Length: 134
Image 1 (cartoon, one colour):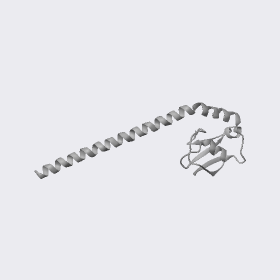
Image 2: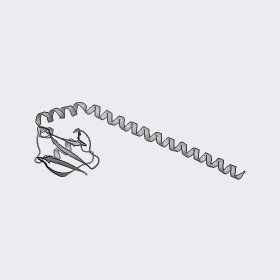
Image 3: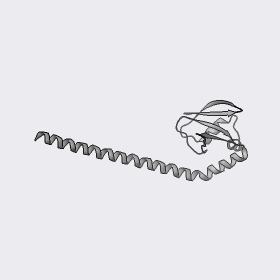
Image 4: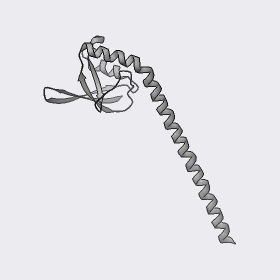
C-alpha cells in the first residue's frame, strides 16, 4: 500500500487527509477512493489533483508516498481536462519511456566510464609496481 496525502483549501481554511492505494494504482483509482459514497464519472472529472501546482493526469501511476493538492474544477471544465488527459496519454507515455531510456543510457555510460577509470588506475598501479621492483 502507498499512502497519499491530499491537501485541501477552502475559504481560507486548510486541512489534509490521507488515502491508501495499492502500489501501481492510477490517480483515477485514488480519486475513486476519495469519493465516499462512490460518485459518477462527472464527480470524478469535477476535480483534479496537483503536484507542485501542476495537474497530475488521471492515468499516472502511483508508486511512492507523496502529497497532492486538491483543486475543484466543476463538471464542465473538469470533463474538458479529463478528455485532454485521454488525448495526451500516448504522448505522456512516450515521454516517460524516452526519459527512462535516457536515464538508463546515462547509467550505462557512467558504469562504462567508471570501468575505464578502474582499468587505467590498475594499469598505473602495475607500472608503479614494476618501476619499484626494477
